[in-house]
Each structure stands twice: as C-alpha cells, then as structure tokens.
Length: 111
Length: 112
Image 1 (cartoon, each protein chain N blue to C red):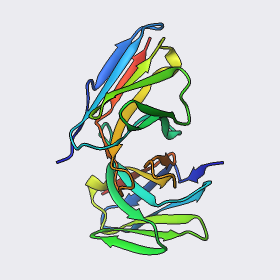
Image 2: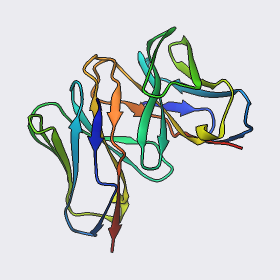
Image 3: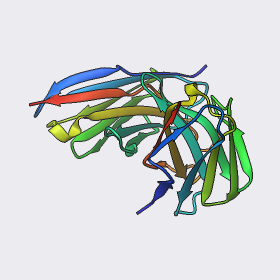
Image 4: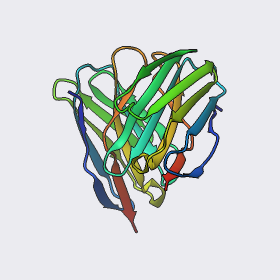
C-alpha cells in the first residue's frame, strides 16, 4: 500500500527554526518532493530529493533517508510569510510523474 | 513562466448536473494530472494523462472521467455531480521524469 505521514499542524515563532517530518511507505520510490501551499493558492515546488542526504536552498533545506523512509523539511529564520501548508509527496517510479501526497502540514508562524 | 490555467476559481453546481473542469498548460508538457484536495486527506489523484488521448485512473476515479484531445488541454468531467464531490480540484502538468510538477490555481467546486 501507499502511506505518507506528516503532522497535521505545527506552530513556531518568527525567527526560529522548524522541522517538518514526513515518513513514507510506498510500493516504489523515484524521488521525494516538498511543496508549499498558501491558503487559496496553488502548491509551489520547494525541493526534490532522490539520494540520501541534505539539500539546501536558502532558508529551506530538505533531508532524505531512503532506508528509513523518512524526510524532513527544515525552515530557518522563520518569517510570517512562511505560514502555509507544506506538502510531502513521493513520485511513482513508473516515470509518469505521478505524485502521491501526504495530508500536508499547516504551519503557523507567530510573532 | 510556466502557466497552468484552470477555467474557473469557484463553481456552484446542482446535484445531478454534468460538470466540466478545464485545464490548459502552455509548456508543451506530456503529463497532466487532476487531483482533489480535502481537509485532512491531502491531494488525491483522480486521473492522469501522459499523452494525447491517453488516460489512466488514479486512486479515486469513481464518478469522474477525463478527456485529452489536445496536448495542452486536460478536462475533468463529473458525469452526474454529487454533494460528496464538493472539493478543491487542482490540475498539474510536467515533463516525463521531470523534478517538478506545476499546479494551476485550483477550482473550488460546491455541489448543492
């Protein structure tokens, strides 16, 4: 079966660091994606991991451990505009580009 | 800039109506997808298409059909709308094997 788990909600303080975890159990694996979605808007691409390790992109980093079926998104120097939902998704290995999503984590950044 | 455009942001339809949701992309992507997004359930794949006139069922295809007559356009059809199809519908497109899928703004459909 396909199962991707993320916490439903998180709260953090402006300027702090927050880590959003994602665990997955899927029948195949061809990369893990993180998307950001502000309320009422389209999801936008944040990061992609296919090999184990940390990918850093500015204030955002994403980590993958394939053996553990685990990823996290790390957000540093939080800003109010980072309040959004963060979606973890695993790509199907069939090369159709099909993405399997978790339920998303709603992050609220407080002053 | 890649653009994925969905024809309506908000729609209200009556139970039993036939509903068409349209999606157009301007990047010559082969792959196109329809998802629905519900609170607590995340995005769930309804149908996808990897070429003109080709389609495959996703995880929740019941009550839906799709049409891909041209590469840039992928339509989602609710044959007979029901209240449990009230949801946010998101279209996406990508190149095969691409590291990124691009999403439209979404259509919030309410069936009354």
